[in-house]
Amino acid sequence: MSGAGNQPRLLRPRDGRIVLGVCAGLARGIGTDATVVRGLFAVPLAIGLLGAFWFHFHAHLCACNPYWLLETSEWLCWLGGAVLLVYLLASALIPNE
Image 1: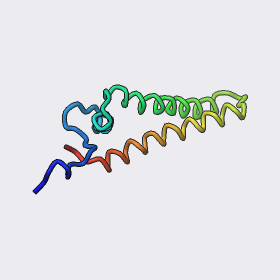
Image 2: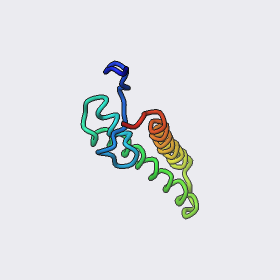
Image 3: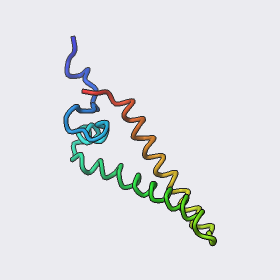
Image 4: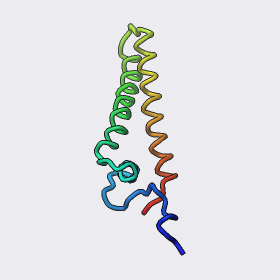
């Protein structure tokens, strides 16, 4: 017999998904709009991708590579990778509806 108490709090919905439904499920779980949660994932991911782009291409195209700039773009690469890892782990751990 399954009651309401047995239901997991976080579920990835089948409707309202964009990629894997993680942001929509988290938004439902905390009671906010999915756009806010998507923004919280998308902005650091975009900044991380921009850092990866800058780190890769600037190092090859420019003869002067200030250390602080390369270090900053390396950290931005790690930020993007961490956000992507959290998203993929959440998609594996949060069940579908």
